[in-house]
Image 1 (cartoon, rainbow, N blue to C red):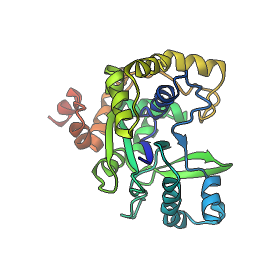
Image 2: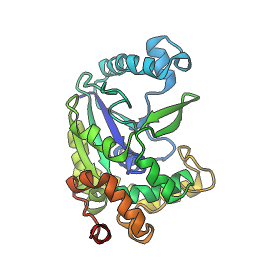
Image 3: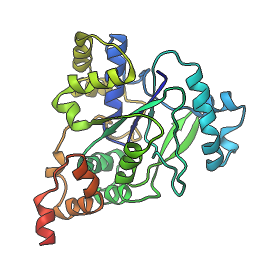
Image 4: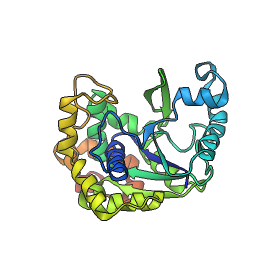
Length: 283
């Protein structure tokens, strides 16, 4: 086993999964500001250490060309599964060259969430309106930004449906699909499945303890006590609701129709039922 990418579109449950993995592996209650598995990365500092080049002086496509050597070097040093979080699209925008390849047993867990709920959470995350979030999720040129190693790094996201399809339909590395809604409905089966896929043997009682330790209300309590360092906004919490289906009370019929018009094919493939208002609009 080697690198395990925890991949997802933003606001799809990646951080929750990281916390659960940390707890299941360590046996401890996770500290949201010290999550070992799933560190956002690889960082710019690690990139520079391995390549000997200045990250900030390289053009984005130059970084893309060099990154596989970074992943290969990381994988060569790994004896046990090591998790890295990414929100990046599998294929670089405008290129068919994959951002990731199967280095020394690398694999990916892809976390997906109903895009109608993603839109609500993403709007809150960015401090913008719902229409802006919906528009960005349909924009092939959309990027997110994260700070790594002191540098602000742009991650290409592509559209929501192309992000999902890019990770699920690629043939470079094995992928384990995990739905956010299944994490809520049956967290034991969901988290145990991820650990087994990564090659980690965790006793059922350890998984159960990790589920208890990462209940959403407990993560919220941690954030109230010590603000989450990865939150992009200082005026709003990162851990907001952690629910499935709350879009029904937040989105207008028109907004629902627009999301389903753009992403409906992939939604149906993943088992997300399209709403009645879409049918009524098309009638």
